[in-house]
Image 1 (cartoon, helix red, strand yellow):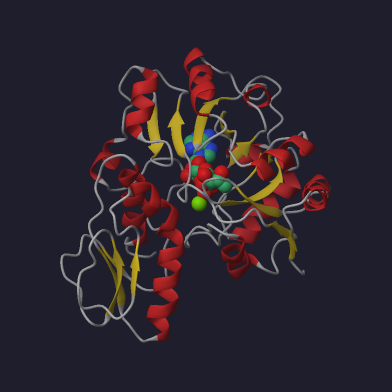
Image 2 (cartoon, rainbow, N blue to C red):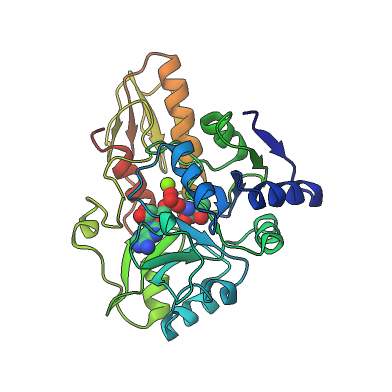
Length: 325
Ligand code: TXA
Ligand code: MG
């Protein structure tokens, strides 16, 4: 299969819509990362996502909508969910809620959990595509399962060309880390994955604490179903919280770079967490490629703070550093 690169024009969006409608797979850029989209109501199309990514079938997918109203037709929204939608959508927040009666999302996408993950992403092109589709679009990050997420169209091509129908080029992703996932299906809100909306902002909006799964609070294993411990993995091993770097290591710097590495990518010289998030996945890809080309043995990562967007950045880096299965 030849993967088409579609331009960010009305004709490109219409071509993407037609492919999705016919059950094909189209990657598109949200504000967080590129997603690999399929018609959420089409079992065969949803199954094709798992095949193209090599994704374990027990790991459910997020459904994307152009409006909160469309999302809340598929899930039973609580008052808190409506309030968070008004505050953060379109934007990098995903809510897990019980499925509504008559929910049209394929059971393959929800892994038979009885809940569904829903979000309204930001980005004019993606919203125009979702609006034109009129059906929910499931989209996991558009990378082979377990590897580094894509934050531009070329990253998607590098990982999935030949395995999907098209990529809608929406330019580089503004946020750069995936959406924050909050589980609102139980008695108290639980943070399943830190992401583009900070925990601090969520708790302020909720007016109550958001529970952390026990392990996530100390940077260890996440608890969203199917969130495997090794993820976002480059080819080279990753070493966290480095306070020195060797000449045979590539360096992912934050702030003033440590001396001694021949290959450096600075997430943010000024220590800005928004800039760091937006540059994270491109940096891991660059250091991996350039480091391997020069025969280096690993990637050392300077400490990133634990607050605000630093929580999501550290989460991705921690899993990039996990021992591979
Ligand atoms: O920013 C994002 O969220 C991107 C863009 C494309 O929207 N998507 C994304 O999808 O990151 P993915 O598949 O890489 O991550 C989806 C996460 C998985 O960890 C999955 O376990 C969780 O969402 N999830 C999906 N449905 C769920 C459910 N019903 N209950 C709990 N977790 C769920
Ligand atoms: Mg992913």
